[in-house]
Length: 388
Image (cartoon, helix red, strand yellow):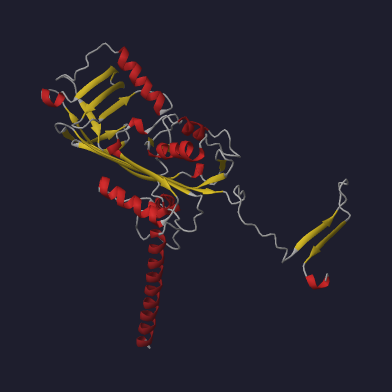
């Protein structure tokens, strides 16, 4: 009797073990997918909402897209906290507007979209950056064009693309276009700054790595810093010089709401500043190390109809931009891509092409007198044998 009870207990324990094992496997899998667990988090520090955000950032529309970092498409755009901008998308927009549409881009149903108005201003052009720092092209979307871009950026920058595989290269119309740009730059400081270890940022973010200089730094390294202006420790701008022709401008305390207005404010303050512009041995500088790697689908521009100057209607089928930027005590590097697939709107065909008006399936017929508003006969034809 006791043996039977023992066997029954062991059987129950085994069944419970198998049940918990299955639940553990299911819950672990659901946590990996960012879904609600069925039974328990099994001691893991798991936040479903945060996990969902992270999964969406990586997988949604093939984007590695952090909702906390916004993209400005132009220097004129109103910006929020944590916003980045790079001129790559403006360069391909300029080609779309000037070379292809040959007029301002105006979305048919959204004529007053502010970002489009700003893009049409074309306030960033190829004249604003050296030719060796960018590559751009446009043409009919095809595998051949894709291969040409990959060869070109490999040869010019020793780089591969992070966005070309995200576009649909099949089923293109001869009048469709793909526009592409890559910008890449690297720069070094003449002398490395010091690593300053970890500190806080905004009194709420801990373990942030900094570089810079403390008091009594050597003159040689101080000379690679220029003070643009200094009002107080909450309102200033400085410039870090590099071995190349790049300048790193860092500012604090400006409250303007676009990058263009912020930059203009820096220039105005610099012009008015009459204090010491050299970085003296009593000065200190502390800069957080930066590492940005973002990809953004520009959905606010997609699937909206606009016209070329010849009346042909187009829409932006897909638009993507990436920005990668690193800054540390040695220097920095930036790589940005922008791509835009522009397709002819199939509803409007403006060229003379062969057309077939075959009434060889269900159709409607009306009879009407020329000077009358209403027909006097109508028929819907489905089974033609009934009308023969």
